[in-house]
Image (cartoon, rainbow, N blue to C red; front, side, top):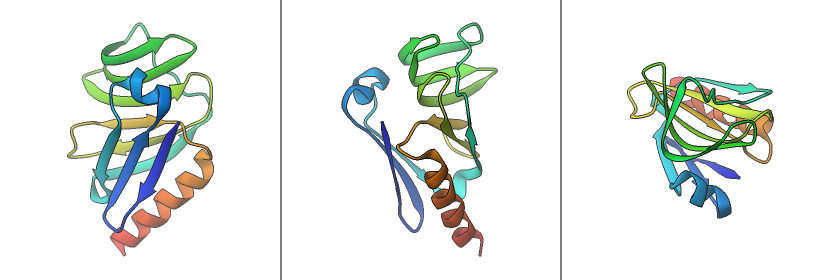
Amino acid sequence: MTTLTLTPDTLVLELGGADRVLSLKSRLTVPLTAIGEAAVVERARIDPLRAVRAPGTHLPGVVASGTFYTHGRRVFANIREGRPALVLRLRGHRYHELIVRTDDVEADLARVRAALAGVTA
């Protein structure tokens, strides 16, 4: 599972347990100014025919965790495929998109949007 923490100017994603091992990553820090859009997808998925995993783990239809290259874009995912996930589209960051599962994606979406409103206000 991914834990999302917000500071006044950053979003921090911490991966724990098996997710840390599967993704080969323990933490991602993103400036709030890099987040262009935040949304929830009901059935998160990484297309195995269009995505190259490097590094990380992908068991199509089950789990995707790590860095993926798809359509010329770098994506970090930590999802259970077919389940809801938080999607953050970034600009000016090494990743173009973050797709992660959290305990409550809808509540985390609201928290991110509130933090973004504070940055632009």
